[in-house]
Length: 252
Ligand code: ADP
Ligand code: MG
Image (cartoon, rainbow, N blue to C red; front, side):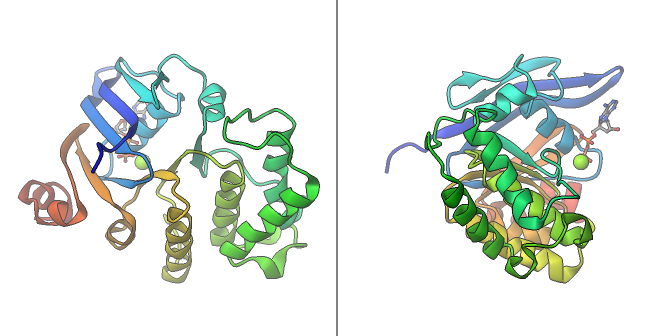
């Protein structure tokens, strides 16, 4: 078997907020096509790491490399154009548009040049965009609500709508920061099913998640962050059995 392709590499990343060291010597390697979960207690630095990756926060030192391109120093929109999307940050939903219009909007923006992502076809007709949006809306179980205003959706449905808006951009790397936070068990399960479906599309995902049920049903690999350091990285089974992880996170 050939070497796995590391599509994302956070290399020796440090992040200092005044006197607080939020990230220390973080080395994260994400394999192409895999779902890589980052777990860890509150305040461990998970969101900070994500913000460094997407260019919202500059690292104090170290670098982030995506598919051979150094991201450090680039603006968030430039990083987005390279094919990295983060769910539940941008794009936000358009409350006055219908559900279907919301999912189609990022694809029009993409076609019209706002998203110059290399794997996109150059010509997307409105019919093609509509078909792709309908297929995504079927995945998120919202075909019955196409013409409803997005503002009328429940919180869980809004979150899934945002996910569909992200997916229609066809990112190569999708970052999810606690996608099921605050969701009911039912909404959580619907979202897990959706994430499993999109897993089969071969897109690489980095998912920050608190809910161990979600992590162990989705992750190919898990890294554990505690007090700004990665204390363990491995297969789900290895992480489950790691005594350092149990002590730091799973409650000993
Ligand atoms: P997590 O997402 O794992 O809960 P965060 O990355 O949000 O953790 O936070 C890590 C640490 O950095 C926390 O102590 C938090 O208070 C601090 N922190 C996060 N963002 C900032 C900021 N913009 N300014 C100062 N401190 C911050
Ligand atoms: Mg966080």
